Length: 144
Image 1: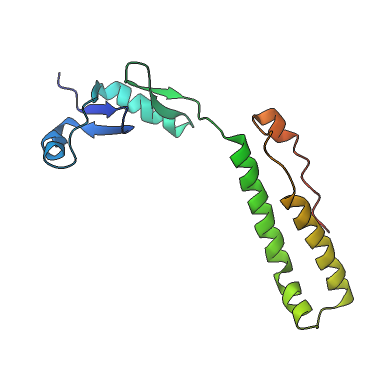
Image 2: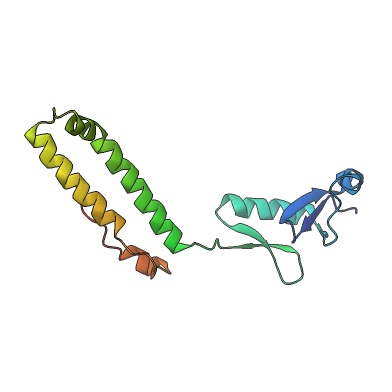
């Protein structure tokens, strides 16, 4: 039985044996390509659909693993989402303030939202290394 699929740990990609000639004339067939059975190929992508990632094992064969989460980046992403939301909320008020047509109520709200934005910006995520610490982040309360 001829294997249809090959996997390269260097590129993290799959290659069809039928395309080998084209790869050799173009970018080149990976020198670390290992054969993958049709059954394993399907199982790998079924696992990927369920949230796993495909990585190479110690022999270069593809295997499924849990994704590695960078909790610091996740926290920073959440901060950026909250900042974008806050800036969208106050955009009109900023314009009204510059034009000196802002109401006292809106000015008070703008001040509260600016304090919220400042509180978001000073959060320090350097110690956020796992899910447990991520869940303890004391996000500031949004103004009402």
